[in-house]
Image (cartoon, rainbow, N blue to C red; front, side):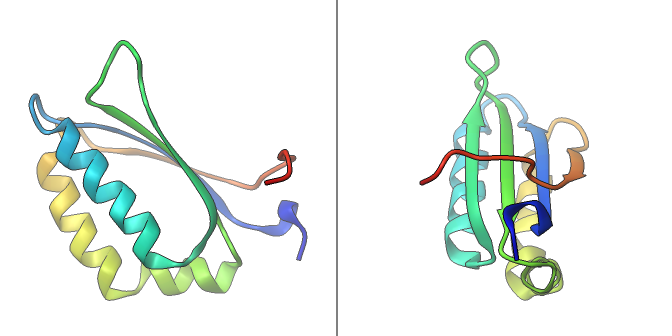
Length: 101
C-alpha cells in the first residue's frame, strides 16, 4: 500500500470557552491509544487557542473502519462532543505527498 492509498481525515473542532486544554488532551490520547493511524498531527491555531485541527492518516481502510467501529472511538466521541462549541468539521482525504519521517 502506498501513501496515496491510505485514507485520511482533516478535522476541525472548536472547544467551548475554557475547554480547549481538555479537548487537546482527549484528542491526543485517542490518537496515541488507537494504533490505527500511520501518522497524525494535532495543531492549535495561534489566534484561536480553543480551535483544534487534526490531520490523521490511517494505516489502511481496514484500520480506519476498525477504529471507527471500536469502543475507544465511541467513548472519545461522546466526551469530545460535550466539549465542543459547534459541530466538528471533518473532511475525508488521501495524502498526495509527505516528507519522510
